[in-house]
Image (cartoon, rainbow, N blue to C red; front, side, top):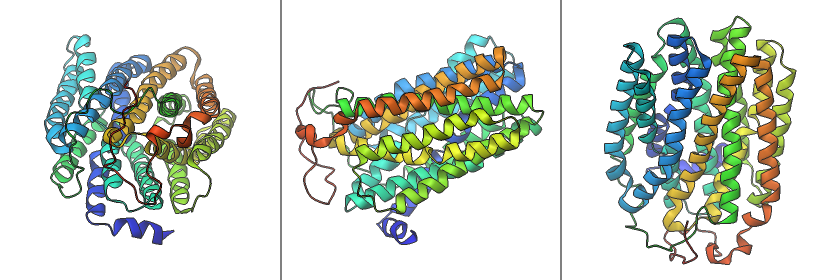
Length: 418
């Protein structure tokens, strides 16, 4: 297992940009939960906290692909550095609006501005990997490492944020996210040697993204997975509160991430012979099975244990969907295509946060657990129904060259537009 990962980190600049990207994208593990804990801690309402987090996520979902298209055209650092500055200003404003009791509409506006200026760091890092790897096996391993790296954040982030926000200072999660964004940006964007070359403005009619049936299938699946993830975050806090162990919510979310981390590491070390379009629904089957088991939880210990089981299906599903996108996306719109799955995930999280918050306030956390099983099953159904569209052989205009090396500068394909 270690040899496969050592191989990719031996590539020039790989370890440096991957570690910097890990710090820069810490907000994916702490900011959404941090906003929920912050707003709920100050107002006492889970529903209101979920709505604010939803505004943040929805706006992020809408703007991520637009930012990614600019990145493809003009380069990562040129586009993202000013956007990071706007994001940090928005977070400071959000903290002030809640703590100082400003008009609550300003809280939603600032949450939206913060969401509009996040960008998709995971897509930027994966685009760098796609530019430097030498073959598709290395790319699978690289994508697996990135999923594992995400789970490292999800193991440590929720525990730290929940403990700090509930036992010390409610805005701690938002503050931690802002600090990680600033430090990560200072480390990541100056690394020019691994930054993919900007491609300039993409001509109208170049390649397909959302109009490609396989990519659209992957995006729809990600929406359902996002609802699942957003619901789990709020359910964990609500379930812990009902059990008189609210601070234990972070530990239970870390159990979820730990299961995902272990499964993701194993997935990346395995030499897969099964085509990725079949791997994706297989991993979703594992996730759905674990999600329905969560209904058995009646105390926090069992809840955390079952979240570990749910986590086993998470990283493999996210790795597989990234690989599906990489095989289908036009090279000149790869960052944008990868951003769409992050966007779909974020959009789903916003729905899941609001939906779970509303259900918890009205019927309790145990009732909200049904959201998790239903969404995992719907994602699986969509993946199975859309399986033919994920076959690159059936879409020859977007097929990659038949060789082992990954060609990130292939000739643009004229095949319609979004």
